[in-house]
Every structure is written in structure tokens, then in C-alpha cells.
Amino acid sequence: MEAVSTPPAKWMTWAGWALTVLVALFLAMDGAMKLMDVPQVRAATLQLGWPLALDRTLGIIDLVCLVLYAIPRTAVLGAILTTGLCGGAIAAHLRLGDPLFSHVLFGVYVGVMAWGGLWLRDERVRALMPLRS
Image: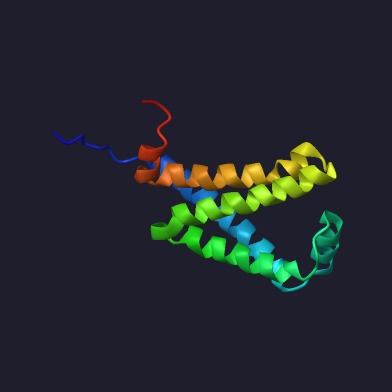
């Protein structure tokens, strides 16, 4: 006998899409600023110890993660890649001894929002990562 699933509450779907949009806006802004060669981004790149030549590459990676995350069929892959991207940012800020809550953990916040958004709006993700058994 198959288990009958109940549709998620409307607030879950709305909250999931709200978190998804926040993550998408962040990735779009970050990628666009890197591609536009904004002086503040260049300064931050140098401060992190990265070569300026990587800015455009990182911008493209941001936008690829965004596209994959925004398409429902590939959203899980996009969240996985976004999590990896955020992990690199966390490591870079941790290495420099940047402030914990504003800089180092920012990647954690983005990752939690990305996965939280998916969990709230996608029943398949909830089935993979149940809060209770």
C-alpha cells in the first residue's frame, strides 16, 4: 500500500520560494558585480589573496549556480554547487581571520537559505532530509 502524501501548507511553499529568490538575487548580484569588474569587488578579491584574473571565472561560476538553482529540475544540483562555492568563501574568510558572524559565516547563511528554500518547496527534498522519522 502506498503512502498518501499531503500537500505542503501554503506558507511552506511561499517561504521556500522567498528563500529561493533571496539566494538567487545574491548569486545574480555577486556574479554580475564580478563580471562588471566593480572596483570594490577587485579590492575585496585582492584582500582575500585571490588573483584578479579569477574574478570573471568566479562570476561565471556564480551565474551557472544561479541558473541551475533557479530551474526546478536542476535545483538540487544548483544547491550542491552553491554550497561548494560558499564553502570556498568560508575557507577564504576563515584563513584571513575575518569577523565570524558577518564574513566567515555568511556562506553558511546562504547555504542554509538555499537548502531551506528547497526543503520548504520541494516534497522530494523533504523526503530525502526528513526532520522527523
